Amino acid sequence: MVGFLFRFFILLAITAIIYSTFKYMFDPKRKLQEAAKQKRFYIYDEKNNVRKNFLLTYKGVLFEGEKYLGTTEKSFEVVSIKIWTKEPNSLQGFEKDDFYFIEREIKTSYPHASIEWKNPINELVK
Image 1 (tube, rainbow, N blue to C red):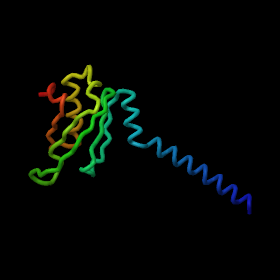
Image 2: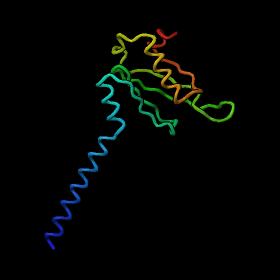
Image 3: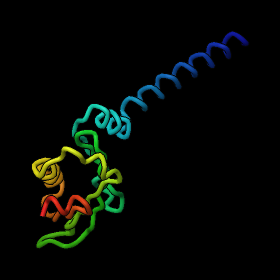
Image 4: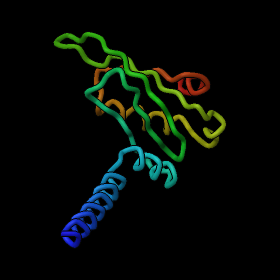
């Protein structure tokens, strides 16, 4: 009986380790951090939850976007998005085309949305 319990707890521990490893590997926030380190583009967004801001990284800079719900001709959609970064000093080397690329990528998910950049980005994009 003791041998059975010991095997059961060993199996349970192995299962917990495997589960934790898979959960870590497929965590979207971890993917966002990895993309930021590798200076790639990645969006972390819960599209079904309008109240939740999205995060995106591009060229190692982390941006945050706030979604606003409104009406279109046929339905309620995200009609406005405000984007900013908490690290404006890390924008060195960014060009207008970089921000236009980010806008195009966001428009694929939210085609009805107007995109507004907050300071200091809006000075460049005008």
